[in-house]
Image (cartoon, helix red, strand yellow):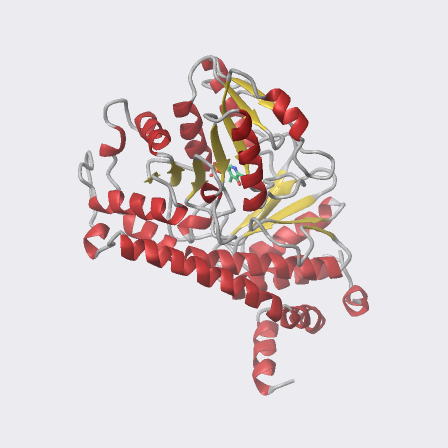
Length: 437
Ligand SMILES: *Cc1c(COP(=O)(O)O)cnc(C)c1O
């Protein structure tokens, strides 16, 4: 080994990693470099896209001024919303710290664009857990169901493809809005590519032209060169403590889309008559800009981390989804351990490698809204941020951990190596397992 590499390896060993763990993992990392070059080109493309938007919309130092009170004529807020619309190729956007999270953004997009008697169709199976209560799939106070909005669902076919026959049958005179979740969330279905979302939207609009197509874009932003709003989506919706916040935004959500959809969303977020005119951007606006600026390279780091994790864990005999070198459409990597001890050990390792709360040991707990215990590893600067390196999952068969994020690739890489070390320390894998691979 070259002297330079020796020093790096020593640094890892000084950080508590055994030599056999390093020999196995660092060798894998080296072999991924060619593949990573393709990802770097995507990041470069998206960095240019963000830069172009910031230049065209004339972002200036004045945009970072703190605003308070009603927030009339908030230059920073209004300019940022134009930057988002530019990036997503939409007519308008709503990007606010008053949108508390991704679920809230989705709730606003849905509830503002639906009226009593309307129907929602999900042609991609069950939506994200928290949306079940928004829609009223699980009875919930204030759900859309309570307001007379009905819901239909068509599951994906066994092979993950769209069930076009049943989608066609499910579109009726009441169908007002189609909700399409891009990321798999906590499921094992495939994540949808932007191309396939485009095909689905074209199919639906061909049957019913004026139906509103909304895409839950969480975890998908900047993974590909195009966003769903470039292939026909009327609204794309997401969280700022995931991809587009770049790890810096401390709160917030966005909705980008057609002018009338965004207008209705704004009247719902604030008040009829007020809409986008109010809502001070407070002292967080500069982090929204800077986070967005960093987002393409942060997403790139997270993707590299996911691919490194998939390769390392697959090599050790664990089931990984997606497979290491399949084309990615979101930043999530699922790993199945088949027993609770493996899951817990992996999460402990991720936590131990974090910059914040590394000394804390994550324990499974009864989280509200889940039917089994959940374990979460997160040592994040922004509480609950999952663009930062994090791992979690419900403690039930088949004991799958969902792993995502990493503000820098070196941290994602170390977190995973530290997790493999933990698996060895806890006896889930042995030195022989590492040598045999
Ligand atoms: C995270 C996520 C949400 C909800 O976002 P929160 O910020 O946790 O409320 C919705 N859909 C998908 C696919 C997500 O990944």
